[in-house]
Length: 202
Image (tube, rainbow, N blue to C red; front, side):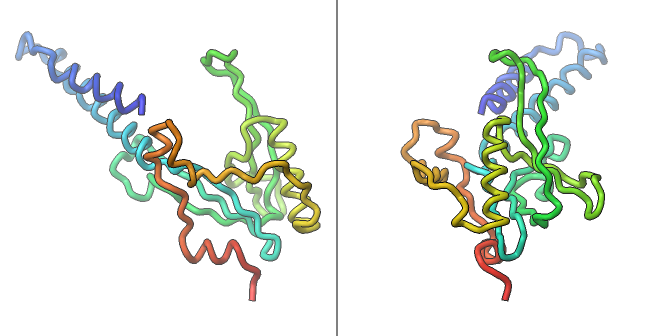
């Protein structure tokens, strides 16, 4: 939402700039570029705020040995594309997944360290990663979640430890004070994938 507001402010600010000299090509070009950039930033921020779902769940199907990933994609270079923006459900073979820990430093108030655990989709029979998707936001959570996923896929639901609290349902948060989360689209799996990810093969 912040990106949309900033982009809108810059857009209207650029519109209000007076053209001091029509013959000054550099000034006109700068104005046009500023208008295009601010309009693109505002549109991209708006799409990101209104189309990003409340959650990006992952389903593990032990019977099919498949993993179903519900994730949102965006591309600022293709603002009007329908295929580059929106939710995509990817299906991977469990045997091709490999957990990876990664960290990087960025300009943040908490010290700048960003860490996460990704799941890499390896090409069968090799260590070449064809795709990656986020699995957890910290090494500790990633190790715990990955252990639980392995126990479930190898031994079944009876091997999963009991939890003190039920899992959080992000779709059921209409009473939150976070306006962006309330306006975000709810998670809705395609009907065929929803059925396949919950059932065993015939």
